[in-house]
Amino acid sequence: MNFHSYVVTRDYGFAPNPFGEYCTLATCKPKIRSAAAIGDWVLGTGSKTLSMESKLVFAMQVGEALTFDEYWNDERFAYKKPVMNGSIVQMFGDNIYHHSGENWIQENSHHSNDDGSINPLNLAKDTKADRVLIGTKFYYFGKSAPTVPSEFDEIFKEGIGHKKVDVEVGQRLVDWLTSTQEVGLLDDPIQFDNNQFDRYSGK
Image 1 (cartoon, one colour):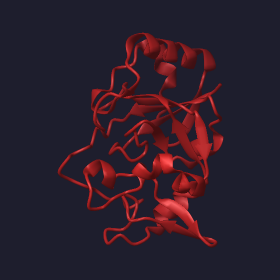
Image 2: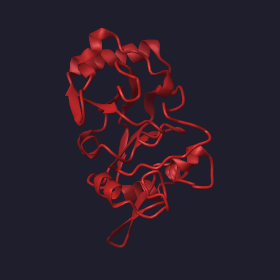
Image 3: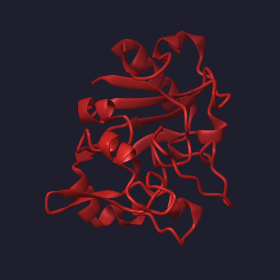
Image 4: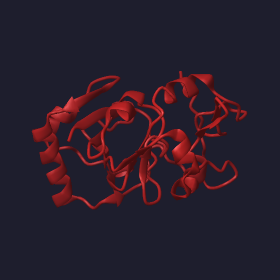
């Protein structure tokens, strides 16, 4: 079991998408999506940009991994397909990629252009890893992200990319979560606003 940590610089409920029964990482972070095995943990820590330094935004154990086409066609995840005239939660759906023949389809979504057309920057980055991570055991804190005790400072990664956390430290962090926190979606994403939908240009 490995522990993969990265800094969350944007948190709208899109990557990861913590809504419903499953927490999913379907876009961004292609290296983590490629590397994480079943049973591994993905740790998202707070950023200076979000005024969440030294905090844990989410922790998700990988229970399953699917290709984009499998994710798109699986009825369990139909609710994660974006609905652009729906609720804000629906608009930030992350089930956006699938194939038409040999071509990628990018659904109108947070990662599309303002007019709903394909954003090639996001498509290229997201599809570097044709793999969606799915967790049923997860702690998603969002706006209520707790300060991580100093004994777990090793989990923090500075800057872009990700790091593998020492297994002993990672396991003790999970033990701390198990003994002190509730499982599941515990608060809204940090940048979540019921009245506003934003796009990401990929730049």
